[in-house]
Image 1: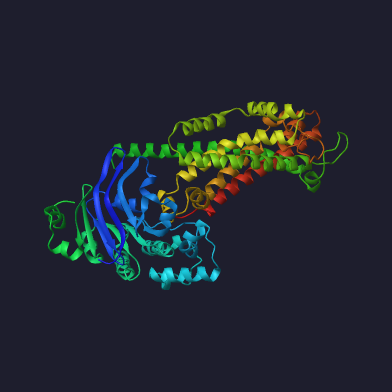
Image 2: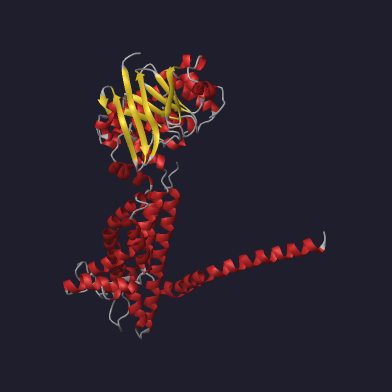
Length: 252
Length: 281
């Protein structure tokens, strides 16, 4: 494996007295897509939210164990600093409705009060939109509201917004579950393309999607990491009986 | 078609007619008010009426410039006093759906909304008029701002509660601190709803008379000093309507016309803002 970007070590998460995640161990290498799959309620979304500490928004959230982002202890950092290094794309496209496409892309800078020159912003916007394969569609309407775009375009705008911050890792929380098949295919293509430059963690309940885009797959069931390994290997010769049953559609 | 169905269809028609009739009936009072005020008030409306000060009885002409300006000053003053508190309290209540302080505050807002305006006037008298030893525009502004508060708080709370959660997540995930997320993302997105609430609260206080009787008090002259008594449209109407002179009665109608037009305008602008600035998600 190439250099480690995210390392999860003996990690557990609780909401109140409920243990959601049980002793997860995981490592993701740079420029790889790691898919987290499992049935609904298995804890995969909780795991991804623990990476940028968004789970702390829910009262009663507790964690045990360690997580490292490039050797920095995630739980020793300020959440605000941490989240600027981690991009996140959510289930539902969520561009800022009162901002133009242009302002949406640089929202991470604008909202955080980071001032740059106009031409620097221009180049960030162009680079990020090109990275999100949206530039050609919106380059003539950069100053229109982002909410006029289609659902798939909005999701790519959100990806561009995350890319603009030069994230060390990009988190996808079921990014295509609210999109139609065509937009889904476009996003999947984009994820494969983005691998050249970004490390990604992808939550999906779609087994086929995990197979199509990821290099490594983690199968999570009832808060436990059942199996983790190269996607190809897991999908052809799963080691654990539960993984095999899940992949063949016996549950989930 | 058998008798059974015919009977039902007649009932259906009758019901529909009754509903329409009663609905028309309910808007009748408003139409009548507008009719009478326009018929009796429009005659005295002219440039002089809007720009001149009242003249003593016996002298023809004059206007209600002081009352129009006074109402304007009171609106600005009470808005300045109530908007910061109202929006802040609204933000707090929308963020904190549970909790002891929030629930007590929510109850207080409801009670405050139902508090008779004359009582609020007395409170403003004790707080502001008594210590300053003088009726004043400021005390009137304080009384009216207390009346605006619950409307603004409720409007802000309800508007911000409608903001989708994923919007806040989007901002927080970019590393934007919580307070900036509220001020730069949530608040601007809900601006039209909050503005509508503010305009409706202004419309509500524009016609308030009771709390002004012993706070702003009324003034025959134009006064720009906030620590001196000030005139207002409702007070001028009250004063003229209570007088024994027919000329003043005509002026009371004229002032009523102006007041109703103002309130109507605020309501229409509020509507316009709500429709035009509606944010799409």
